[in-house]
Amino acid sequence: MDKVNLPPNPSKLMEGLRDTGYDFNTALADIVDNSVDAGATKIDIYIKMDGDGDKFIMVADNGCGMDEETRNKIFDPFFTTKDVGEGTGLGLYIVYSEIQKMNGEIYVESEPKKGTTIYLSIDIGGNHV
Image: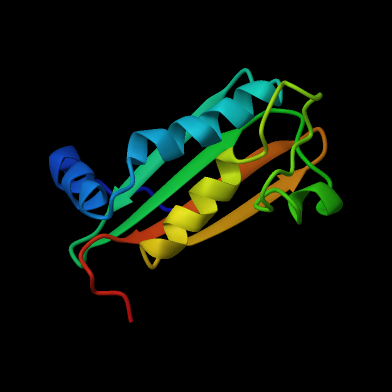
């Protein structure tokens, strides 16, 4: 992802997400919680906002990563890699569902022992084609 030096406008981003009924902080917290649970010692978060109302968020970690079989299930309701009683399996399912409601997209790259990167694209301005 290319770096863009746009002055951030967090109040506009948060206002737009609140209008959808979903709390952006909760979505990021769910993603970051999974990174921590995967043993990440480094988590990078990049947010890019463009003039068309599109927001691009990337969360990358150096955790244990996932194989393809696991990666294909992470947005399924109640899917968890945690022990019984340790997780509900709803965090990423809710993130995925809410991003879809915002006309957004979510994409995941991951490899075992190499970490995970989650990309979010959200059309806050209502300009999604």
